[in-house]
Image (cartoon, protein in one colour):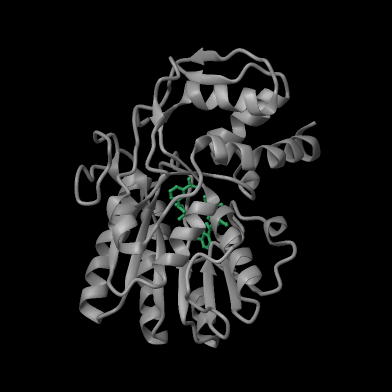
Length: 321
Ligand SMILES: NC(=O)c1ccc[n+]([C@@H]2O[C@H](COP(=O)([O-])OP(=O)(O)OC[C@H]3O[C@@H](n4cnc5c(N)ncnc54)[C@H](O)[C@@H]3O)[C@@H](O)[C@H]2O)c1
């Protein structure tokens, strides 16, 4: 399904992190809807996996975004658009220097390449920029990250704002909330709680939730994240936007939805929460994303879990059972 009138046929598009969850879904969206687009994936194959790209007809470069020699390979092309998804996406990594280098400093280097190519950039920011600030989360308010990951993403937003202004470029940041859907399996323990709970439910284990399952999350289905990325390409001014479903739901509800959809009857086991930065309530205020990017999420939690459930069963049967 096409999300915008933009025509990417004949365009050259870079997707960093294209072997990862969101990047590979973007690669297939472009391939399926714009068959004459040239798509180049750049990835270090950290949490990304070649299996996410089986069926992808474009080019793949293995490289580290934080290595200038690897980045230099991108100058063999002339990019019209760049989707920047490459990052240390694991929010529990505590090596501060590494996370800032890979997520924020490498982004500065990529922006210089984008400038030289005259490319429009859409990059992945995160709801982690809000830390534990009260929901609903609005861009420009409560930007107090609780971990180095959130800090690195907020640093990216600051870098983008300045770079766009100084160089008269269009750079759009998308603060994804909790994304779930096909091609996240290779993220392992950092895959969405929807997949992890679904797999635990199917294996008959008692799924574990932090006491008492009342924390709320804005889970957004991958299709809506793709929509936001494609629509962002038409933006004529730079900015940072929330990308969520706009609705926060308790983990208990998510669990109930999964057991109902997967038709398995198991009880939850509540455990103590070891993370002091665990967010209690995230919820995207998506009013400006709707008004300025024409974003219109199509998947609420029930519809998203319904769309994803057959895939969760398939993953369980092929990877776990
Ligand atoms: N999935 C979510 O819920 C979510 C939420 C907020 C923000 N994000 C952001 O969205 C982007 C995509 O996330 P994802 O869920 O697809 O995660 P992912 O880990 O599947 O994708 C990130 C990709 O970047 C690659 N990568 C890591 N380090 C690299 C490096 N040094 N050089 C080149 N490539 C490197 C990985 O191999 C992986 O393929 C990330 O920037 C992440 O921080 C994701």
